[in-house]
Structures are given as structure tokens and as C-alpha cells.
Length: 155
Image (cartoon, rainbow, N blue to C red):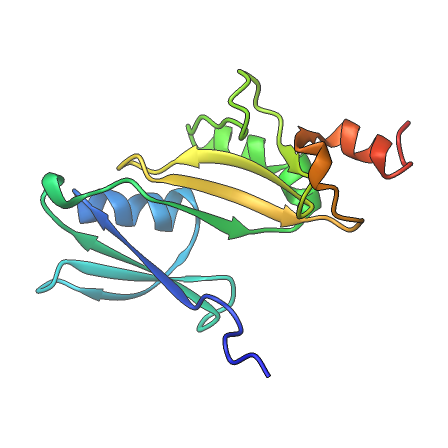
């Protein structure tokens, strides 16, 4: 029986904790669950309280290395609302192919649909939603319309 059942928490180093708290609480609307002034750290619930956690730690710029992680979302929300959600908050977004569009793309090997954006420290963040259907690694990264055609659901 597999003992590992998920990823409970991840941590990022940030240059300005107050700016990052504002971003994650007000821009991304995550619930801040703990703050510790002495260690210059803040923690946020992702999803339901106690489900997943993000920790932010203020560090000198020389210690802040850009990282990547993805927020699990409903696939329909990623496809239909995520870009507007980001734009309404003044954030630009791009897809994995960085093709100059703001169209969420499908990783056919999972399959999942996603869109990328950055936090104030340049950490690469992603909204991703798992799709129903067969895995198709040979298809690579494709548009949602191409995915629907592969699934026989094209219009």
C-alpha cells in the first residue's frame, strides 16, 4: 500500500513578504492561516483549510530562486475563466508553448489543461485541471480544440 497520498505543503522564498502576502491573499484569494513576524513567514491554505498549504519566507534577494508549482483547479474553470481571472487582477498569462496567445493548452500525456503566470518574485505559477479521457503522450502539448478532435468530440 502506497503511503504517500499527496503533496501537503510547499514553500517559497520571497524578497518582500508584505507584497507577497498581498498577492497571495488579495490577488489569488488564498486564505492566510498563519503569520510569524519574527521569522518573516506567512502561511496560506490552498483549497479547503488544512488540505494543502503554501509557506512564504522573506529572504534576501540573493537567496530567492525562481520556482514552479501548479494550483489544482477544475478543468472547465481553467478553460473558460482562468485567463479573465488573471487579467482582472492585472496579471499576464501564457501557455506552456509560450506562443504569444493566452489560450490554455492541453498536456495530452496527462491529460490536463493549464495556463501559466508569475508571482511578484517571478515564481512560475500554473492553474491546471485534469481532463477526462485517454492519455495521449504522442500528441504532445496541444490546443483544447485539438484535444477535443482527438477525443472525437470536435465540433
